[in-house]
Length: 300
Image 1: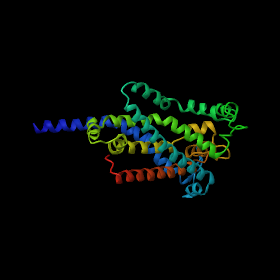
Image 2: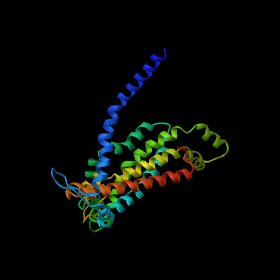
Image 3: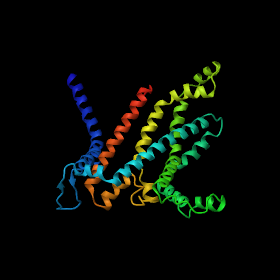
Image 4: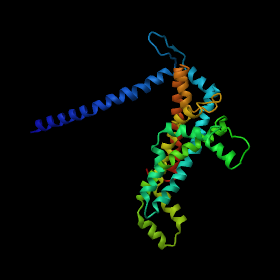
């Protein structure tokens, strides 16, 4: 009897291993191996092709990233974008979620309307906003011809400062619906009895929001902050399609600058080093965010 039980246990273990094996192989080939390969590439003057020697240069690629002005601009642009769009999406998404959650009818319609930008293709959105903000675009037409706000067109996409405003507007507009959905799910999980009890105690809407709503969705706020921060560092399509880093790489983001070094300048080692430095920056920011919410008493 014991022998049969032991055989059955071993057979079950083999079946479990066989079930996991395809996924583990796929994960190793397309996730673990590329990361290891990329890390090795960052220490070489790496060239793509057969029978081409790749010269080991140590930390030179990493030093070049720190000394390269374009790289510093790309990182600072991405940080600026994250600092503007992440709080913007969180605050506006929370406001919209609270307002929709308070409705007695029409919740589904508003959720669909606000979520449409999220599911709209980044390519379509980028092309649309490029036409809106270009020198002869719709916005300048309204400002100059209709409202008479200015005598000449504002060159939104020709300077670093105005381009960052455009990118921030796009990021917030497209991401509010995602934050709204996360917060709506969290709001529905808060017991209504808490609000009813607070009304009996004489608490107003502001106190309910500060002492019931916010504490009840702190975990969702942490999740949103972390995911939106990672998403900000992964911004590529709007930058590539709207300004492509122009003028003089002043509007580059880390992904666009990484892409250009890898596939246009053929500087694979530099791009690999930049990718790992960005990964470190994202990890540090994420740890700080978790630490901050830990200190605030977030239940994860």
